[in-house]
Image 1: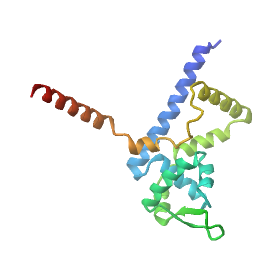
Image 2: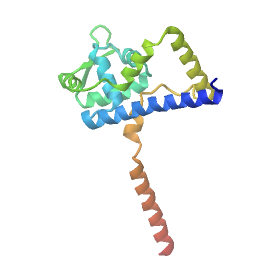
Image 3: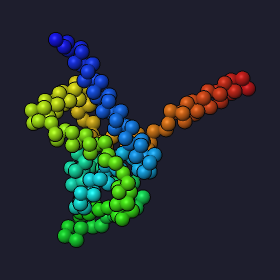
Image 4: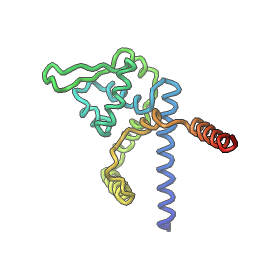
Length: 183
């Protein structure tokens, strides 16, 4: 018989494996293709066909509109995605892959978030419901229910300095303080 503690440990181990896979996949995409995993995921969703709004793309990526808009701005800036005002509704923007974006996708593996969505879709309705209830309960217990569902590692990949840079800055500040005290 498996104890509650053993199940909690097994669940944490599974979550760690998933997060590690998503992280590693994002770093590999950045190293090999020059785009983050989140950017690759957006490109792959646009490969299924153009979208008529950021909200539609947010639905395809199962994330928040504000999160996907940051990613879209970055891939537009790189010339991988194009946009224009809708001819039928001037308030809406349409988005699609450019030939450059299509060429990048031709040499890319499936993004880990896409594989995760496919794996979730392959679960039985009962399994998926139980997983959703369990994860929702954990989110609520941790007080994280107001956190937006951002794309995996997109913000941290671009904004957070590396550990080596932080360590270097810390060492430089410490040296400067020591020198100031001695001087």
